[in-house]
Each structure stands twice: as structure tokens, then as C-alpha cells.
Length: 55
Image (cartoon, rainbow, N blue to C red):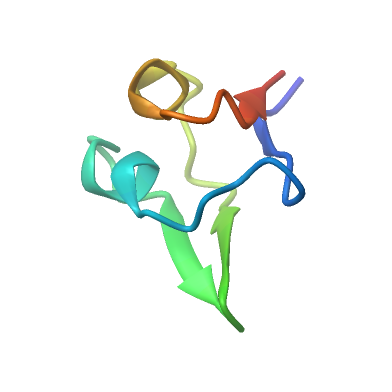
């Protein structure tokens, strides 16, 4: 099961993208999205101040 970003909780701060070791998170149309290159390491979720990322 892939990681997902809850857009309602997301603060659009970019902490998830900055901490992704494989560059799987990109900003598109003002929203951050997790791409298929995600290895589900959880670094994004651990660094999200809003708790907006989950499985």
C-alpha cells in the first residue's frame, strides 16, 4: 500500500519533499504528490509537521 498525502491536512511546507531520499515527492498545481518511485521508507511522514502522510 502506497503512502498518501491528505491534502486537507497538508500545510504545503515542502518538508516531505525535502526529506525524501529518492525524490519521489513533487509539487504539482500547488499540491504535493507522491510518485510511483516511492520506496515507502517513511521519511516524509516522519518529517511532516501536520501528520498529513499515511499509508
